[in-house]
Length: 132
Image (cartoon, rainbow, N blue to C red; front, side, top):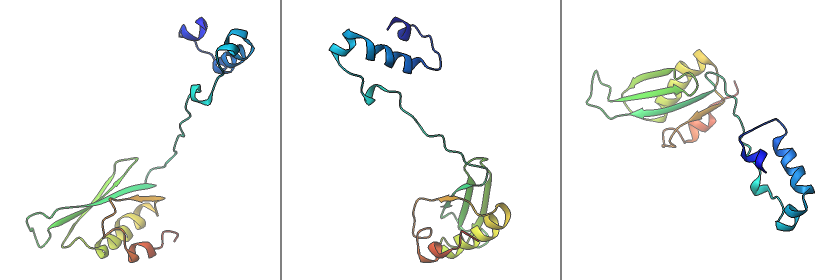
């Protein structure tokens, strides 16, 4: 156990420690190794540029040139920002923004993340064809 606690590391350290404890009489008498004692495995998500977008409305702001909202889309990987001024914050604006500013320029993303407002979670948005 001193080797394990001495800050040394090699690729098969945990396997060797498990084998040592499995064959050690004292370790067998005191208790067994459980999954709780193993190192946790965390998946690494691989996402390309423009695969995941976050969208949200900002506003209402004081009206300027007839617009009181801003619809913002941010790519999660590159942090690229697309934004347009809007007169209202309804689903028609969102669908038009996605088709004209995101799909046509960067392709169809794998995921779009929003805070689940009614302008993002509705029938027209669900029927929006993400496959073509």
